[in-house]
Length: 72
Image 1 (spheres, rainbow, N blue to C red):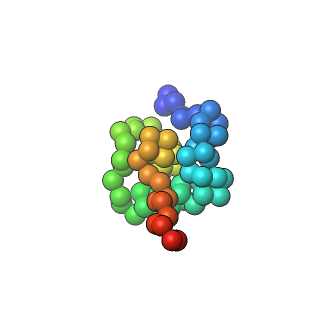
Image 2: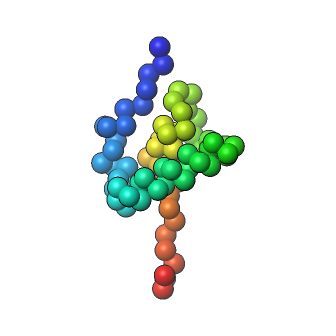
């Protein structure tokens, strides 16, 4: 049996890393779409689908929404 990643134990950290709930949702959705269109995974994960991959990539600092430039 494949063990699933436990999102609930890491959710508050993910929200903090993304900068809020809505930013987390946008970031995960954007990365999932990219993965579905054929982008390579940035982490080595065997189990789970695109959501788990995107979530772990965020937790490991592999993806973000980018920092606004000065004056933006």
